[in-house]
Image (cartoon, rainbow, N blue to C red; front, top):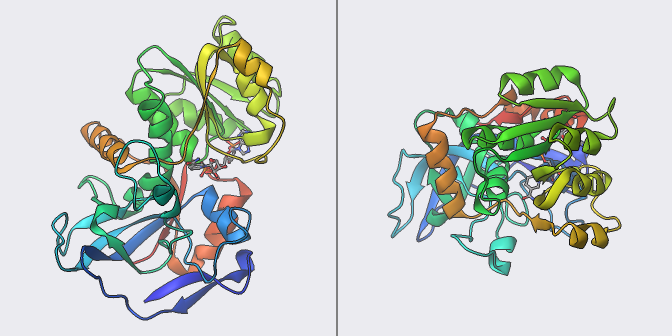
Length: 337
Ligand SMILES: NC(=O)c1ccc[n+]([C@@H]2O[C@H](COP(=O)([O-])OP(=O)(O)OC[C@H]3O[C@@H](n4cnc5c(N)ncnc54)[C@H](OP(=O)(O)O)[C@@H]3O)[C@@H](O)[C@H]2O)c1
């Protein structure tokens, strides 16, 4: 099999294409010929050694992949040869609260991921791809879409009429926009670029804030709600945005802590959290049951992931540079098969 490996140290210059022996599926395992993989910010951090500097190398990166089952091991009943499937981010989180095992069995680190033409996964770690999606589209769902779903639906219990504040127009935020629209919520979205805000409007965002020209975007968001505050913030900005997110949300509202785009640590303003009775909910992607619910909802409403650009397999490093530049809107995909 051919795969990119982070090899001999971290950094995009350490991401090299190589050969490995073709793996055989063991009992309850399936072999997937990967057709497409999408990039998450986590994958970039993993390659650069910022996600887990102690990650054992070599590692095949990428959490998200979709492809076709070409061999099944003994005892497999969930899928059969020829089925189109997506890999699950956590290979060991069926439902409920996460366990240490669920956290430690994630694709693209510590387990080998989807930036290669073959993966062997447990049958519980794959899900059938809905027929209406291409492999490139399906490869965007397991991490970014499920994260947005877990934040807004599994933990957030979002309902029609709620107001959601989204940060930027990357993978998680654009899925959050699509999910919030599906559920009848009002969406306020921020971006560094007006052209991206217009694209978000075309997808149904109600209110647009440029966080560069309006650095007090928290106040602007509150003003849009008659100063009441939003019901839910999908926090992907991290250290540089967290405090403002606490100021943008209404008393009793929810801040879903998801991302660290501007840093992963900083002071936690405990007083704001307690005085406002806020719910600060950490999110780590999500479980299989949540992914099944997401795929059912997307299929019923034919929701199509927003794919910014598809790169060829031998352009994978360029795809990472594209993600790193922040020029994208939605998801960046690499075609593998
Ligand atoms: N906890 C989890 O389970 C989980 C799952 C997935 C992702 N994440 C994390 O969530 C974050 C987003 O991931 P992603 O894959 O969606 O990333 P992405 O697609 O690379 O999104 C990047 C975009 O975020 C926006 N952005 C960057 N810095 C910002 C800031 N300071 N304030 C507001 N917006 C900012 C920019 O949008 P504009 O160009 O529009 O300004 C940028 O283009 C990352 O930190 C990632 O590690 C966590």
